[in-house]
Image (cartoon, rainbow, N blue to C red; front, side, top):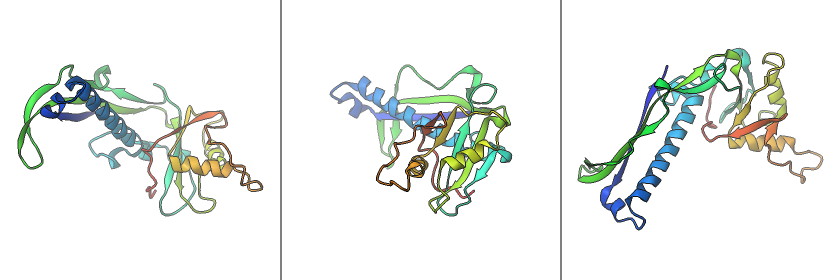
Length: 223
């Protein structure tokens, strides 16, 4: 099932027209910023689903099969790490009617009101589309949950291998996905305690599988 995404864009016409590089350049920057915002919104929805926005699709936080979840069992400011396989037979984003996100080719000028109800003319556009998360195979995703900051409760290769042990035999993810705190914890876990001054390099993979870092996974999870 897909859900509507509608990100409205507006730029004061007087400001855009007065720009040194002309209104087209300013509106292009506005569109780029709007698309980055949309990408962040979709990313949060992928992980937290209706907890992030009740009008959107379900996320991995609730969709991940409980048999494919291992826990660090920390309390407090917790986070998750996901191992994911992508594809039409596993996990993928889909666009309604086989379309992705679109914008009108031309910005229109429209009179709108500011926060104080004062009218002004603005260039108007929108980023729109129907977006869904297609979750076909329950073996597509594994999750390490309740990663915190206490001793033995932080991200490590040991937790990654504990998760892989819960997945089907010979199962390999396409990506490990984590936030910056978990990446830093993994780096510390790889630093030798006998030579702590020789800091391990910033991790880029776990057992040959690439790591993707995202800010969409928070450090404030409670389950």
